[in-house]
Every structure is written in structure tokens, then in C-alpha cells.
Length: 276
Image 1 (cartoon, rainbow, N blue to C red):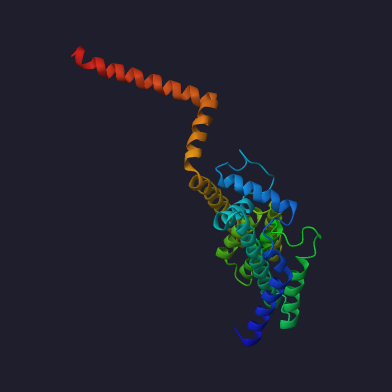
Image 2: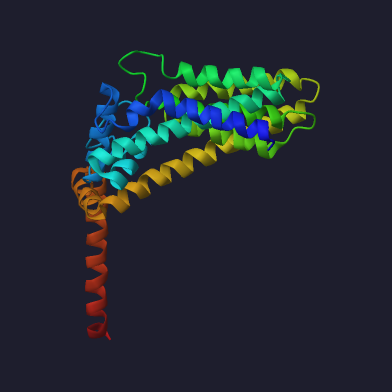
């Protein structure tokens, strides 16, 4: 990294912190969305199961993010932590945008820097009552911009299927913050089909690579959510499992048949010595 690049990096970080410094001294929710995420996260930390005991309409990772910061910093310190994490997310997105503009738009350093700065400013000008909040969109966008970077790199020259799988992973990660991110998947598929229309085998393999990344990420994140809930309050999950078993008629019947079969086998085993 050259001296000029380091200066630009520090400038972008200073812009992120300067525009959002107010959020670092406010230990309360900055919007109604933040209040909802906080309440949901605290309920999860208290042992409630997401989408069963406590319900909101957003994907799970925003609640996991808030729960992690609440667990680390407490009710007040956790809010400062999540706001600091949001600053890092915006900063990372600006660096990715700058890299994309320089690498793939073939723009000079000044244009790339302005693109990054405009994004940083834009994130604080959405709505006056919601501009500094740690919302789903800011976490979704960092993964989507990263997916654009990996996708554009993957299709340069010879198609690199590993990077396409990583593209699928990143899109699903963004969708687990806000589901609208998934619209990138058909867009990537269509773009790949058009740019490599003379190489249908590469198109099909590229689609499969992106799909593999999607499936792998969904499975991993689903398992992660289950593990988070289990580690928070394993005893509650045992009670919930027993309660579910009592309420499920099919499971009750299966368990009843299993218990009856076990009892018959036990009686046969007890009578066998007498028969001999």
C-alpha cells in the first residue's frame, strides 16, 4: 500500500467516524427498528427461541448481531458496540467500492475516492430519524458489495468457479440480514449467461458453483443459529423439545407404539428362561 493509499484509507475512516460519532455517545436506541432488534436480542439472551417465542419479520443475523453485542457490552454498552460495528461495516463497504471502481471501472484514484466518500455520506442521509441507526441495510450492503467484487473478479478471462461459490456465499450472508439481497442471484446468473453465451459449459458450471455457495451458506447459518440458541440456554431447549413432543400427536403415537413394543420384548425376555 502506497503512502497515498494509506492517506485515503485514513480519510475514509475519519469520514465514517466523524459522521457517526454521535452514535458512539448514545447508549439508547436511535430508531424504532433498533428498539425492536434490541428487545428481540434480549429475549434471545433470556432463552426465548427466535421465530417461536419472539417474532419479528426480519432474517436472523441482525438479531444475532444485536444479541452478540448485548451479551458482550450489556444493555447500554451493547448499543455503543453495535454502533461501532456499523461504522466498521460502512468503512469496509467504502473500501470495497473504491477497489471495484479502480479495478473494474478503470477509474483513477480521485474518482474511486469520491465514490467511496459519496457512499459514506449517503448512509447518513436516508431518513432524519433513522440515519445513524444500525440497520439491516448497512450490513446487507457490505456483503453485497463484496459479492460484486468477487463476481467481477471471477468472470475476468477464465471463469473461476471457487470465486463464484464465494459470491453465492456472500449473497446469502447479505440475505440473512435482509432478504432483498437475494435478487442478486438471478442477476448474476443472467449476466454470466450473457457474457459467456458462447461457452455454455462454463455458464452451467458457474451456475452450479453459485448454487453450491448458496446451499452451503444457508446450511451453515442455520446451524449457527441453532448453536447460538443452544449455548445461550440449553435447558430451555430441552424443555421446549419435551413440550413439543407432548403436543405432537404423531410423535406421541410413535413413542407409544415404541414403548409398547419395548414392553412386549421385555416380557418375552422375562418368560424365555421359564420356557426352557
